[in-house]
Length: 508
Image (cartoon, rainbow, N blue to C red):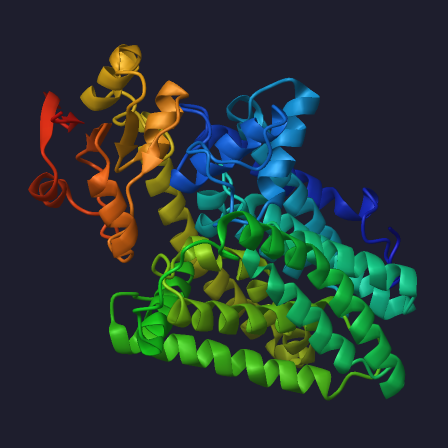
């Protein structure tokens, strides 16, 4: 795809991306280094993706390890893994470290290629941004894991490329492709709806077209981009009765979510993060700054919408979406993983005017501008390197945090279920507070304990007569009943009591 930026550079040519290639190789090496000890990192979400990918490859459909249809997460990432597994004749656990290393390398190369097309190209600015990305703790936390964010972030940049091509050409065929990419991103992560919002917003502000033409283009893009998500949600409701799974109402106030947002931003930058007022203030300043920059950009648009406007729009919409959804719906506390898709656009949005500011300084004072930029970059990179070193220090000895980290596979409870799995009575349901871990180490299905927020499901669980309960002491989920509560409601006989877990069976 050959875009023509203002400086007429070919964005993706190797000649213009020697620096991108160097940083891409470094990125691949870093992911290989982090996954060398124990392979790809696995969390409960990862095991769901893995089990669905395996079942999809075997022709069993989009079904989880517990035989429940996949509804909590959109479908495309496990389809992507399952398809690669079929093509490569290999399990995702085997090829995932290489796959993620390649995706991270491609992400860096695409980032550098896009930066060739900013309005005021600067070689030193490109090098700084690429160095920030390759050392980013936010991204180096994501790419050693089997998480859908790895694909989502790459699709996000592909959307930027296609969207930029559309705003340059206004071809309907490119608009359709832009909608298809946004649609695929939506069924990779539900947060992909922010790309639909980004596309619609910029089509409305596209001064190159008459208003009536903008409305027609808006309808085409909106329909095509939302269609995959609608199909996914309708399928979920038909199979399970819920569009996006059984989700609880939000319990975290908006102001607290602003604090968590500010804490993540402080963590990304060399700023203290444990102060409530400072973190809330940083969140508000970031949002207000993005709004001001977006307003300034779109009100002055005289040419085709640029990568800078795309980055600004997405960063603003993504932050607002995450804040609102975390307040309305209950899920994990806002953290770097949830916010990392906006990291690269956020860096662009807040920094792309720096080269222009430096160039506007009189020659006699330019060294002051470079000194200030250099000091900030040095502080930023020192903060990142310190976090990276801390991560590597732990990962090199024990592996990526999660189910593949050394202490977990070597625990007594895991060794017990692996050795004695075949001894469990036939016809008995197996429940666990870490059903995903049971599946991961035994390849056998297990049922997830019901959430205490749904009393009817809890009553059905207590009414069952024949089941095993496998309890992992290290797993603490406040949404599930505790072992003491289960024993108070149900007569269970201990089968095995271990240092880090226990196995129980109904006392019939």
